[in-house]
Length: 194
Image (cartoon, rainbow, N blue to C red; front, top):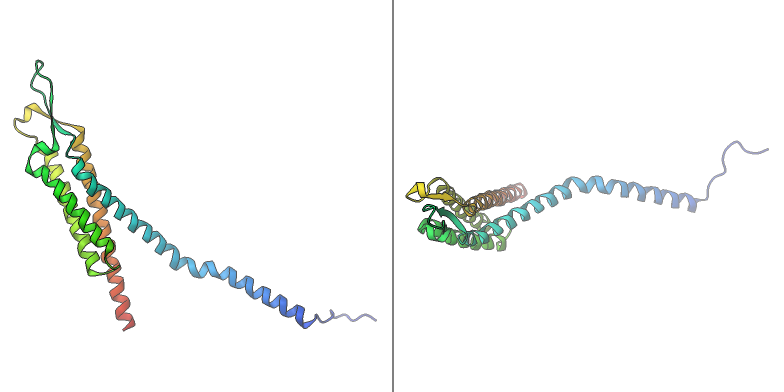
């Protein structure tokens, strides 16, 4: 008469099945354990790099944006309209070249400094201040047309310079704030560990 109970499986076969089941459970658990930590850090790193690159592009572009015409002087039908480049506007506009160069140097120092260090934070703040000043100067030149105001009109080069400076200032501020937040996290981790 056949036994109603299933025959006992060999110990070796049962051990192999248990090992496979444990391995599958471990593989399923890996993404759940890693994703909360790894993915946000990768996204933060991408934002950090994007802000850094945007700041660098704006700092390099500022001196070049002094070359196109910022204003055009319409002297009447018998005269050809003459353009006035950003460099010809005066010392306030020419300072954009120095601000762009200063921001570029500060960004390089910040990027080369140790992560979450005072050097990174301070240099990032200097770059942000330089680009904010550049944005303020360009928008001032948008608002204030050279004398006599009735003869000058704003050219696209001026608007492009103002938009690039504003874009660079926003990126540099975001970069500096992220560096500051990273430093705060480091200090809190140090205190918690101590």
